[in-house]
Amino acid sequence: MNKQTTLIIVAMLLGIVTGYVCNSLFDAAAAKEIAGYFAMVTDIFLRLIKMIIAPLIFATLVAGMAGMGDARTVGRIGGKAVGWFLMASFVSLFIGLIFANLLHPGANVGVPLPDVAASAGLKTSALNLKDFLTHVFPRNFFEAMANNEILQILIFSVFVGLAIGQLRDTKAGLLARSIEEVVPVMLKVTDYVMRFAPIGVFAAVANVVTTQGLGVLLVYGKFMGSFYVALAVLWAVLVFAGFVVLKGDVFRVVKAMRQPMLLGFSTASSESAYPRVMEELKTLGVRERVIGFVLPLGYSFNLDGSMIYTAFASLFIAQAYGIPLTLEQQIVMLLVLMVSSKGIAGVPRSSLVVVAAVLPMFHLPEAGVLLIMGIDHFLDMGRTATNVLGNGIATTVVAKWENAIGGQQDEEEAGAALPSPAAAE
Image 1: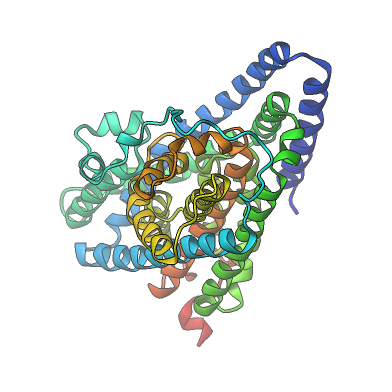
Image 2: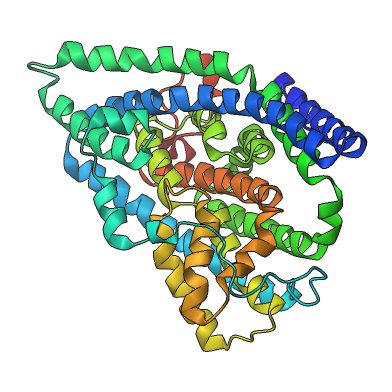
């Protein structure tokens, strides 16, 4: 365990203690005001993260695309990545349905049920295929950069990278080298920003505990415990799937993902973990061209933790209101969630929006989302960590398929990196 991982764990524990003290000593109004200052610190840290995400994705992706040579390579890598993402999403949803049926977390929930006519206040209209497909393509690159629209940045970067790749030997050599030199600069900036991670983690945890208290964990203990059991099973499945391709090296990937997962867990933000995931994959020997393309794509389409949550939460609400769903209805729900969840990238509180949008299709009250809103942050912590693990394994698997692991490290790093496929034979 390195120094920063230790500091993050200590910061998380201090955040719990500080939040508990503030929640116990002050009334609701004062606790909310104090939590506002914690939220401010967290917001500053996440703003620093957002500041580097867009240029980091653009530089690494363009540099990687420029070295791929042609669009067929991009299509091949993208096809393999999307195939893995779809399979992982289906498995995640399926596990969510199985464990919701086995553990019945919504039975005797023990809290008053919201009126079925109440509104959750979520913009479910944002979730439709037409708007999503249109939104994927940027109308202005600088607008996409300013709003951290990962998919839009990815689309533009692929075009720019392929164009530079075609022209680097004739007219774009200087531009290609310049963008490649931006990558280490952005990674150094990332290193500076990540030094503030323990402070951001402390404030994030203290903020939530100050406002919610620890009592809410007891009230929803069965639901949260059941969900984390399902997450543990999903982790095991993801690691097994990675083992099939990577063999024993998958455990080195899991070990490398510990700090990014901890960071994502404590802040409940996948973006906060993105720079660290990229760095850890590089130390494992995964080529930058694969990282730069597959990882941003995964952050939009490979949200394994969010997938399992949408299935689990939907059945929890059905059970809480005593509305039984047949096996056929649950299978249809799984397929609907599979399709609708692919449009959640960039939608605020995306997992809850998906659940709220799907519930009326099966005659379930949208108001049921209000049941889980209060503890959503604690659930978001688990699904964010799962998303990080899933994307780390997925990127490494695609790199293995592409023979893009190892072979480019410095000699002193070679011993710590995953072996290249050629060396393994």
